[in-house]
Image 1 (cartoon, helix red, strand yellow):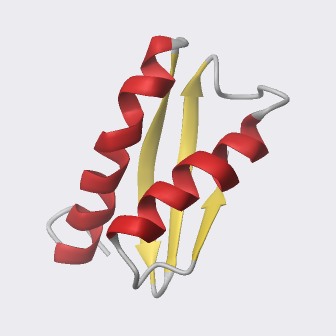
Image 2 (cartoon, one colour):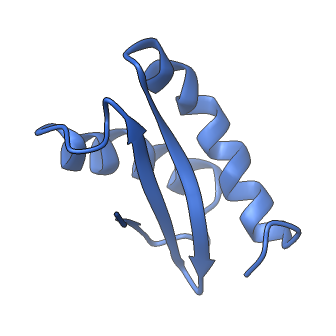
Length: 79
């Protein structure tokens, strides 16, 4: 799925809502791929390798995406 796909765009828009919080701490999130009902993201900056990264994914990023894009059932972090 490419960046012109409507679902990819919706997920990226959902990420835009949480990005300021990550950027305030020196990190960010990049949407790499949407495949079926799974969004794959990459944490960057200080978020990459942070011990709290999995909690950030599940409690922040995944929640924000699922709230805005119900078609997404899971968010996976990739390196």
